[in-house]
Amino acid sequence: MTKRQQQVLDFLRDFLSVKGYAPSIREVATYLGCAPTTAARFLAALERGGHIGRAPRVARGVCLRTPVRFDR
Image (cartoon, rainbow, N blue to C red; front, side, top):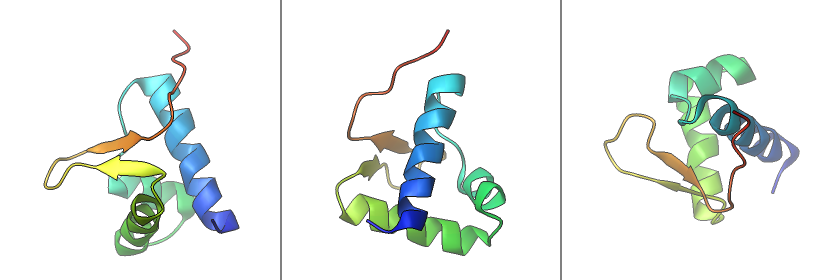
C-alpha cells in the first residue's frame, strides 16, 4: 500500500467513525486536494487490495474490511 493510499484509508476510517456513513467520492477528492476521478482511482486500488469493499452504483457505498469504532 502506498503512503497516499494509507492516507485515504485513514480518512475513510475517521469519516466513518465520526459520521457513521461513508464519504462521497467528492468528499474524498476534497480531502486529498485532487479531482474526483483521481479519488475514485485510489478507492479502486484499495478495493483491489482488499482493504475496502464498494457497492456498485451506490452513493457512499464504501465499507471497510476491518471494523470501525463509532465515537458517539
